[in-house]
Image (cartoon, rainbow, N blue to C red; front, side, top):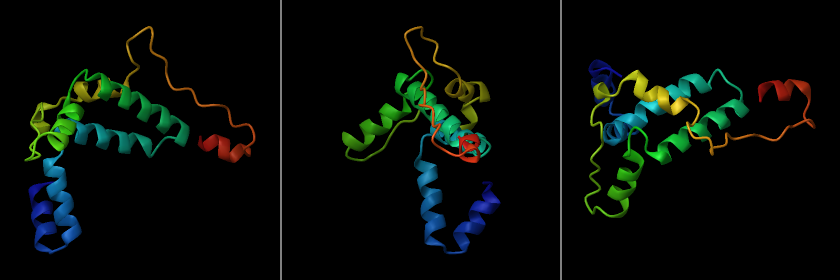
Length: 131
């Protein structure tokens, strides 16, 4: 959303839009970029592939390989009475596409196992195709 769209949304006095914009401004920049890419890719994938991809992203997040923002957000909510997280990187412009790419790649650990969904042979063929 550019500044013109943001200003237009605020001047329309829509509480939901205004509160959503304020929430987005407080969120982790890394998480915003990762989530946007996940939504864009997920709308072209089946449910099964989305679940596998979400699991892989979560594994990267919990491993803190690029950003430790998940843990920083938890710290800010649970410990910091002002709920003022210190995101790193602190701005969207500081996050490269390569940084986001790592969240969509296989875990580089020989002991790590990818999520495997059980076969769903009891479903009709058209439903299986959507998985």
